[in-house]
Image (cartoon, rainbow, N blue to C red; front, side):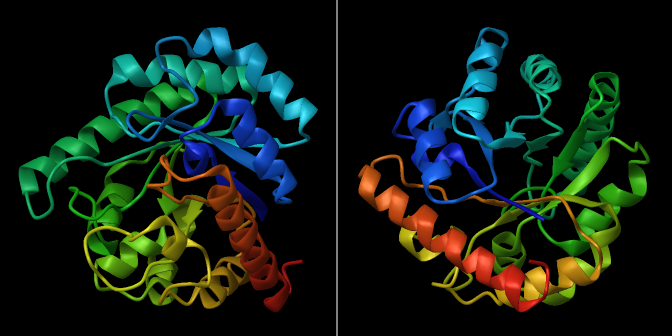
Length: 265
């Protein structure tokens, strides 16, 4: 597994600062955030212009380009992002499911759109991943399985996030076994409680919440998962750089210890 961090943690700072701080924390790679209102390090409207800069930063800071997160299913937004990913050698684009929990029509619409986007991902030679998200049409293991059964494209995968599964009142360690065959990306963070949001950024740091992340990583390792394990901490846009760096470094230490505990490193 490759340890990375989503640049959304450094959403209040320029892209190079995110690269520099993630590298200093000891990560293997980075996931670029194209998330309006949270972090716009990669701008869908000008991402073609950013390709050279992204490549330079990856080389300068010796970080592997692991993924891009662009949450909207809008093909007009997604296609330039996928093209930029292909040009940068980024293998995965993560998207949000959107829609509404418990709404069958919304779930069907989401799955149809994800199927179309998966065909677009095939065109660019990358993988599109979606994760269960609290409040969205795909929000738990059963709805994730619905998408897996309906979308046959080899360019479609699951992005597993234990914090959302935990808040869907499931046990992430047990739930991952049902979807592991299609897991191509993992967003990881901790969470205290089962409320709708993941909590303050500092409580999202791995090891500060209620999720058995060591057991979660063990299941990934035992099933041969060798993809990205990317920290995704949201809500820190107004945090000081010192606070963001502390969260990044603390979480990376816990991730490394989790890998060592299960013999993955």
